[in-house]
Image (tube, rainbow, N blue to C red; front, side, top):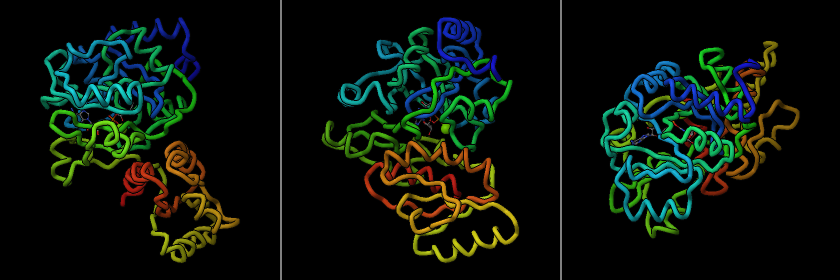
Length: 329
Ligand code: TXA
Ligand code: MG
């Protein structure tokens, strides 16, 4: 583990560059979650991502670049994209453009678009600037498992199967970037995230969610798969079903097992003296804690009982999207 997880310094950056040039994988921190990076120009490197993650081959990848990288070789730019970039990048947002043919066509699984993200985290920028290449990177977890927000989470999923995990501590944002299709007249959100529809509408004038499930499946194929699931038994209840949820909790305690609730601070307060993974009391806190607590919960709990979260602000919608998927609802 010591040899694989490394603090970001001159030695680990040089090692990361050699690995990336050789088509191998390097996990790195961002402000959202850890990414599993590979050289976007090399077909075999991209195949390494799909096989290490056991990721379905029709779920396209996001290309990450440093803040001074010229993306005009990779995609066709446009005015809406420029406005969004001016306001939100570097940051937790991914834009889907019409693609040129520069990177491996395995990155976008044959779609004629390419998703690009410029992360704001200093550690991500150090890595991306040092390699100075477009880096395709999904979240650094085995497909369907909870996304990683620490270097140790990445190691728990891949062990010695990846040669290097750059350690930047715990990710602040805690859930993945907002994915926005900027190929049309109106920006369309394909995946909710830390930057909200309101935020984008404020600067562009208009922003929509991809309407129907079938439209979303066609435009962003990854969204149809199960995601974020912890490796322990789970259940989910509405706040109005709290009595049933407590009955289930107590039935586990009677069997000598260890159940935990996962809920917001408001519900937690009502569950005095019970094991509780407290998500916090606003969207920002909930995003920051969700995956971290799912990872913690799967290690200590025989059952995680999720109680639907109170929708305090717009960011709660993004958290709720992951929360419902994690609990299979
Ligand atoms: O915050 C993030 O976005 C993290 C960090 C590592 O940057 N990455 C991440 O990647 O969440 P991943 O692979 O777990 O999710 C990528 C999402 C999927 O929903 C995928 O379908 C969508 O982006 N996507 C990628 N390329 C696309 C494209 N060309 N068109 C539409 N959707 C695309
Ligand atoms: Mg993912």
